[in-house]
Image (cartoon, rainbow, N blue to C red; front, side):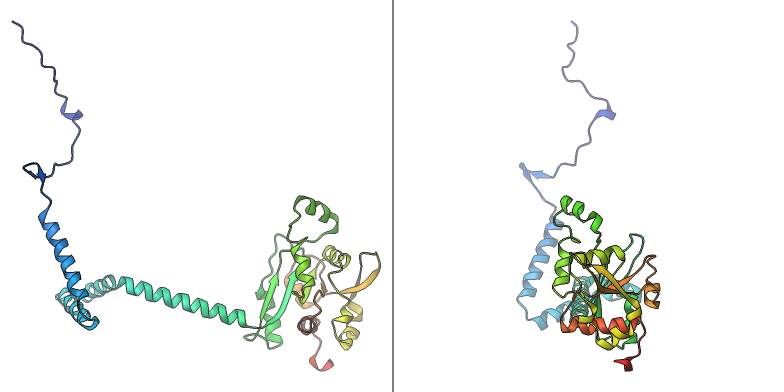
Amino acid sequence: MAKKKSAVTQEEPSKIREEAPRPRTVAGQIIEDTSDTKEEESHGEDNLELRSMSRRQRWAVKKERIKKELEGRTRMEKVSYLLYYFKMPIIFTVSAILIITLLVISIVINKRPVGLSAAIVNLPSDKEVTEANFDDYLANVKLNYKTSVKLNTDAQLDLDTADEIYHNNPYDYSITQFPVLCTSDFFDVIITNRKGLDYCSYCNIIFDPETIISPYTVLSLRDHEVKAADSTGTQYFYAYDITDTEFGKSLDLGMELYMCFPGQSDTNKENAERFLRYVYQLPDDEQ
């Protein structure tokens, strides 16, 4: 009689899936690793014991443990161990110091009075102007360490493209926010090319320098006056040509530069007058 083939076939050794080792059991109950359990229990009991102590007692116990851990170690091993043991307090302390330092610096900088608030209009995309370009001005008028310069270079103003820009984005910064800042006495001076000057004069966001600058300074700079048309098409004296001044050349913007005045507050007038005289290198005793 032929032997019946077993319904269960053995798989090849290479196809047998490796299984994780089974936990030990007694009467069907899983027996956990007692060594780890004991260690955890000991650690938990240790923490409970420490919590019941005073701060001074806890530190004495920890100090004794650290002393035992450091026995027989080299100097570098001791340093490494201590850094690791106290890593969290060190991290928190360093972080706190950095945050406090940055906060203090920020407060000091923000509390410094503004020696000049300037806008550079129609800045070429391949050029850059920063507050550092005004460092010599602050030092020259002895305002460094006492005041700061606020600089804005975001506005792009052009009468030929203004309608199209407004149509595409009614909230465009140059069309909406920048004029509001100007009429709010935010800027002391605007430095711009001809297109920007024409835009500012047409929109009536700059003023006749004679209402901003002292009569003696205006008289001294008659040869540098520039006219532009307002919204009615009337030409008025609105700006000074600073293209060939040392400051104008130092900006290296590759375009003609005009300085005009959007702020009418006493602070605007004081800052604008001081900066204008610096740009044209007028001596102080002429005022």
